[in-house]
Structure formats: structure tokens, C-alpha cells
Length: 226
Image 1 (tube, rainbow, N blue to C red):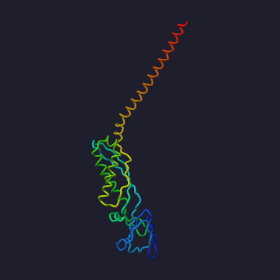
Image 2: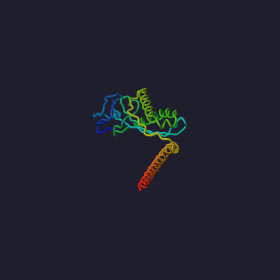
Image 3: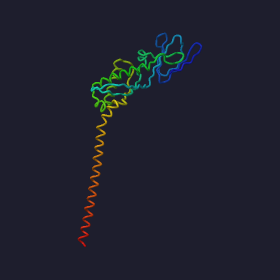
């Protein structure tokens, strides 16, 4: 955030390189740029400071699949301001001219909008897809759906914000459903293990029989010589 130093008449502001500062004087934009540092008169000035480095938003919600099964989805997305002036026109990034902190909560506002949009696009996909398909190919397809939907929404609305990346961390059914779906897999693995054990025992019996036959042949051969 901006660092503001107070003097009897004027003040000095210094913004970090990761922020775009907009200086308005009597309602008109006087200067705008990244990492600015300058003197100003507080009585006629107002400032907006927009972050221009990547920001991260996490999301998590419960949805219902096409076959009426509940799934929980967790993920995250990264976004970045590409047009600070346009963003400042839509969302209030004004800062306190005494402390250099936001007067409102612009980043939380943007995060809420992204979470709501992500849930909307995720629900459109999950609600029309059976549970097994959601779990087997869902993460990749859901990631694509969210990325395309969120990017299109920002472009169409001309928000001045770009989506950098979208990640789907986990898609999980209810615990009892997860156990039910794992049961056939566990049974199949156990069956393969039992078959492997039976094969090993059969091979051991066959080797033992071959050894005994060989011993018997040797005994018969020795008896013939005698």
C-alpha cells in the first residue's frame, strides 16, 4: 500500500511498483502510473491505488450432479488488472489520504464476484454431468469450463481484469458414496491378489511334485543297478 507522509500544508505519497496510482485533483485525473512518488495538496486531491500484480482467489462449494449426487469442489484462480483506470472506474479503490489504506474493500469485492461466477459456470457443467464422469474426467473439463467462462465474462464486460489461471484442486463425492465407489476396486484388487497367491501355491506344488518324481526315478535307477 501507499506510504503517505504528512506536513503542515502538503503531503507526500510513495506507491510501490506493484500498484498503479491514480491522482485526481478537483475530480479530474492529474497523473496516473505505476510506483509513483510526488507531493500533493490533500484538500483538493483524491487517490486510487490499484494492484497490478497477480492476485489469488480460492473457492469451494457444494453442487449436485445430473444423477442427483452431491459433490464438493475446491479450486483457485489467479487474476490480474490489465487496465487500472477502467478497473478504478468500476470498483472503488480510493485510499485514505492520511493512512494510505483502502477506504472500502475492493479486493474482497472482486473475490466475491469471481467466486459467484465460478460457482455459476461449475454448476452449469456439474448439473448436466453424471457423478462418475465428473469424477473421472471432471477436473480437466471443469478447469477448461471455468477458464473459458470467466475469461469470456471479463472480456464481454470490459472490466479491465484478465484471468491468469484456473486450478481445480479437488472434486469429492460424499464420504459414503466415495466408499461405495471404492468397494468394487478393492474387491478387484483383492481378487487379483488371491489369484496371484493361488498361482504361487500351484507353482510350488508343481515344483514339489517334479522333485519327488525325480527322486523316485533316481531310486528306481539305483535299484536296477543293484
